[in-house]
Image (cartoon, rainbow, N blue to C red; front, side):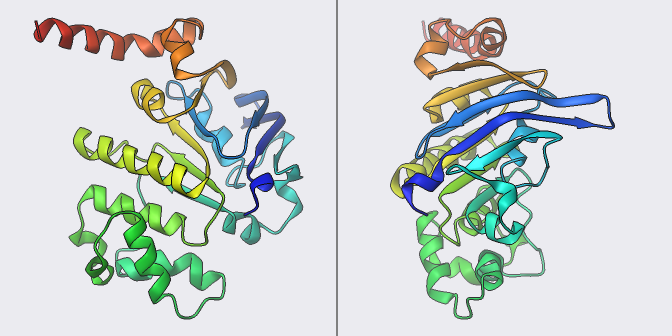
Length: 255
């Protein structure tokens, strides 16, 4: 995907459910090509809904989303999603298909017949051994399954990567390692990455820019350093309270 087509723009995007529940409330936002942005906020703040309007898993009630200046609604859904990688918490691997077969799904849908070499390349990209291609998903650890999910999301070489709470079901050690790997992949491939997380520490450590959502709106838009300096406002400070307290307690324990 050319560099200029990796930007994401929200123009007055709103989404309501059931006619009276507003999940996203008139959001306008520019995400530059090549940036790593975290959407942070408590449960129900609207972050996952906002994310899913990019690949049209959810359609806005009003407003529009653009990629590279072109409305996402202006092209067929399957072509749009070929340009966007999507990783979510439950991975969604097909249990009756091997790792290789799971990774190759987007390639097959795109019309590729011989996917062996590309699958091997993708396994290496997510730091999994080549022999894992023949394994079934139930033979993998949670972290390995999520890496397979990332490999599948990157199969068609998309320029944009959407991640919806991708590490939520993982243990802390695996979660930290996978987060570092994702950040490295972002830098290596020149992706535009949007990560949804309720973990403020994760947002600060991985992203270049953190957007804090509350009641469907962006209430803070700042760098990690600015947020740590208290420049994000009340909602951001509330999310920072837990990691700050944990850091202080650890400092006390360390003497």
